[in-house]
Amino acid sequence: MKNVFVTGFPGFIGKRLAARLLTEKPRTTLTLLVQEKFLSDARQYVKTLGDKAERVKVVAGDVAKMDLGLSGPEIEALCEHTTHVFHLAAIQYLGGPGGDYERVNVGGTRNMLMLAQEMKKLTRFVHFSTCYVSGDRIGVITEDELDCGQTFRNPYEETKYRAEKIVRAAMERLPITVLRPSIVVGDSATGEIDRFDGVYGMGILIVTSPIGVPLPLPGAGIAPLNVVPVDFVTRAAIALSVRKEAAGKTFHLVDPNPLSTRHVYELIAKRAGKKLPRVRLSYGIAKRLLRMPVIERFSRRQAQALDYLNHLAIYNCANTLEHLDGSGVLCPRIDTYVDKLMNYASKALRQRQTGRRTLPARADPYDR
Image 1 (cartoon, rainbow, N blue to C red):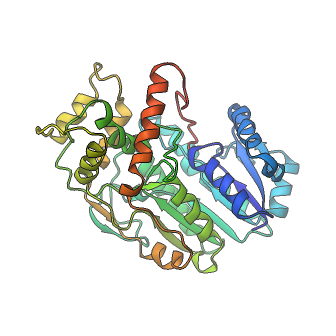
Image 2 (cartoon, rainbow, N blue to C red):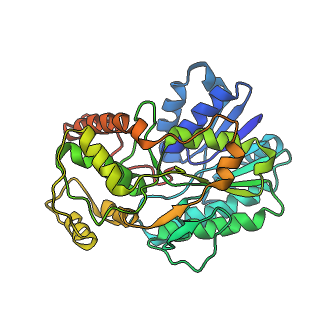
Image 3 (cartoon, helix red, strand yellow):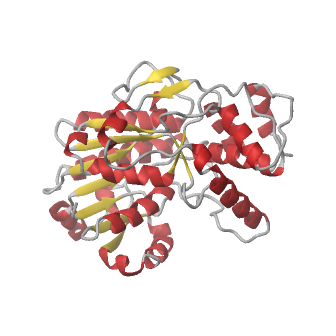
């Protein structure tokens, strides 16, 4: 791994992946694709990397544009030197315009694959998909399955599914690894997270709601709540990107033994010293309540995210367990880091409410 090209910077996962790459691969250089309007934020973050910043190049561009919006010399340099690509750029937040999802999630992926075909030294193209390409399927879902007649709950799921179909078709001519994370939450060591919306927001809703107001759990709570900390996702991505056997395969980056939604909710309430209300809300009532103007803490996006709380899907991760065996990369149990998530989220939300923002008011739409 000599020269790495990363899209989706400075998104939530992208920033942490870049930092980990620079630490774990001391001879690796990074080229980070950043939208023009986020150049200042990206460069500011790179400065925090200290001496490692010397191995980082930030370029202004957009995966949805022809040639990613890059200049001729920039494209030539990428095609000449890139050994690894991590394609994270995607619109993830729920409730956005459908055309944006199509342009970025599908069109952007197609553009990246076209560029990858011109990279002379490419040894791995890592595509970040999502477990939720499974749509409304229930039961056990394996890593090798994709097109199983499912329907989709939102444009995010559907366009990520269509993007993965394009990526799979390109496996015949490119060394591709597909990663499907479940719901990504904060760092298991620090609890740090920099976004509270979209599918991530569902995890934060569960993590933080008992802290202030002990909300009744929406639905029966028997479905598995599959959340993974961002540090596990980045460690697994790097480990799989350098394993020859991982080329041409798909990996669920999930908790292999997830707790049920109710179990997690009760765990969080206990750690927060709160008693859960005995009343239970039906799934439909819960969604209607979250759309009421008086509940200012939540939004329509969080209401949509409730779809994931009562979905009886079990994501088999046999490929992931096999290929990470012996690497030391394991998904920690949520009960080992939930306190850190709660402490960080509680502090960040209090600061947001008092005007001292530690989180962006709105996430970068290319938000990996």
